[in-house]
Length: 197
Image (cartoon, rainbow, N blue to C red; front, side):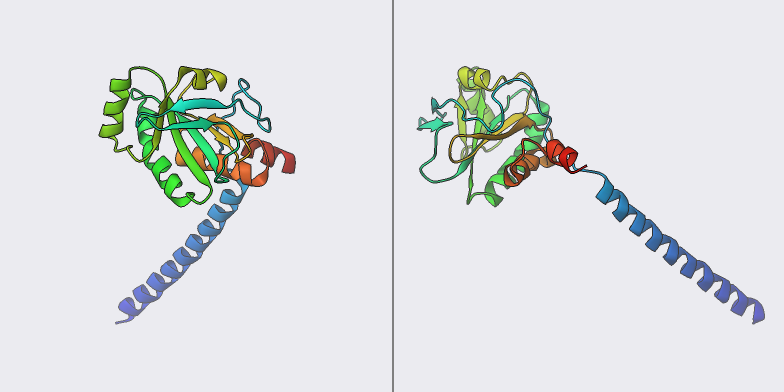
């Protein structure tokens, strides 16, 4: 009976020690989380500068709807242009995040998908990925005006036609960093964190 009591006491001491170790590790994880800044969209030093008005482009989407990208909007919404390609695997993995962001930010944001190439290939891409509810534009001049050379690339234009954020977006975090940059009034999250350091 004494051996059983001693083993129970030792077991409770070990369990209590493990609880304290777990709490210490949890605290340390929180400290590390605060020290590591979120990674924003990768800024490229080409194309229109953040904070400048962008050139307006009259475009027609795959559904035949005509609209203007880059001009002041009548509904007061910002416009996110996501440049992608049907052959880009990262673009395909980003599509659920784009749909989710569009749904969550619908009060202030419109999303336009942009590319160039064969319209039939893009129509099939829209069908395969159920993108029929999004505006999908084929415009080589739009990509050239933003100096897009890697995909997926996004540009966020505010309601007055001013470029608020842009960059390569490989994940949901990168995409949402554009929204946060606009909210904070900075070109990128990296700029924001470096100015606070």
